[in-house]
Length: 226
Image 1: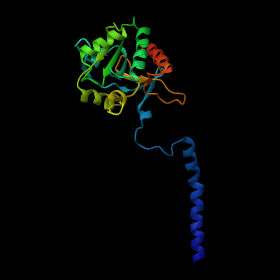
Image 2 (image 1 turned 90 degrees about the horizontal axis):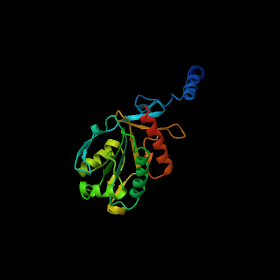
Image 3 (image 1 turned 180 degrees about the vertical axis):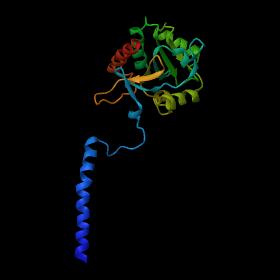
Image 4 (image 1 turned 135 degrees about the vertical axis):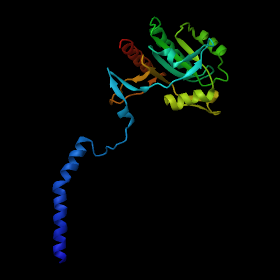
């Protein structure tokens, strides 16, 4: 009886191998063996006309260096670059300022281009301080808004809205931390980006390296001509 049981089990295993193993191999080859119903970030991002469409930029309303209320609606119909910074930053902000100024100069004659620079230290960076900061940078463009407001509101906008890290840290130089990235938004309020060498969306542009500056200028041109 035992021998018959072993024979029966052996036949079942053999049939399983014949029927199911080829199917599993095919699924592995097709890359479907690990797929599930959850949407990954890469599945949510759409490639359109050479650039990826990451998703809608979050809504916001802040006050600029001229004490004027500015919201995302003021950027409607324009391609714009957005960053988080603070005027007393002694580390990466001067580099970001320099590189953003280069971007602004490249598109200074474009009426449909704008910049949003949002401070993460609004307790210090009042409209008056931001106006002086813009003056020191030599910025005269009406389309470059240096924005301030409630700190909790700004931190939420950065960390949860754009997913661009900002934080307060007494041990950090300048007492604040933030990424050195630039966000690129199209005329319809959608965050856009290019892909990396592996074909993955970069999401945001490096505001500290010349390669990032060159890349965002190229892609601004693409969006202006859409």
